[in-house]
Amino acid sequence: MNTKTKLLILGVVLLAAAIFNIADPFNLPEDARDQIWRVINFIIFLTILYYAGGYKLFEFFPSRSSEIETELKDLGSRKKEAEQKLENVQKSIANLEQERAQILEQAKAQGENLKKQIIAKAEAQAAQIKEQAQVSAQQEAKQALQEIRAELADKVAEATEAMIKKKLKAEDHKTLINDSLTRVVLN
Image 1 (cartoon, rainbow, N blue to C red):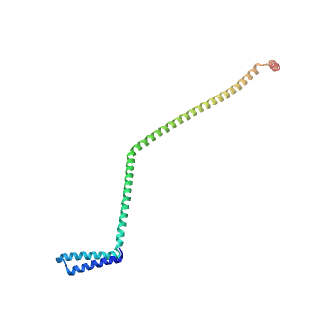
Image 2: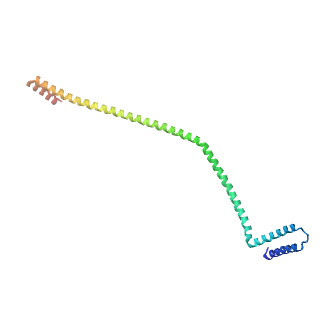
Image 3: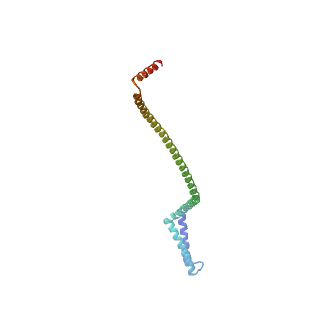
């Protein structure tokens, strides 16, 4: 509708109101005429508001309703996501006791394995220390035995020398040296 058509319709409504108010063709009571006049005034008021900028309200409400509709859809999808998250949390809470028991069982098993490893390692070290102690004791015994033998040999040699000095005469000494030299030469 163009502006001329709108103004023409407004003029016709105003003319009809004026004729109705002056002529009263239906011979209505005062209250009825008052009500009709109020309706006509209301229509005129709305028309003036519309042309004064009220048309923007008609543009606002459809866009606002589409925004609200979009928000409602978004809220619906967010509600579904929240319900899904809540369900997942409830499932994880339900599984929490089972997971705790499983973790405790794994920790106990690891503790037992670690205990066995520590004991085995300690036993191996103890066996190694014992073996080293035995080897060390054997070496010390051999060394002590060698020292005793050397000392004993020295003492036997000393005692033999002393005994020979007492019993051996010069003549026997010469015979002994000659026998030893003969043996050395023969060999």
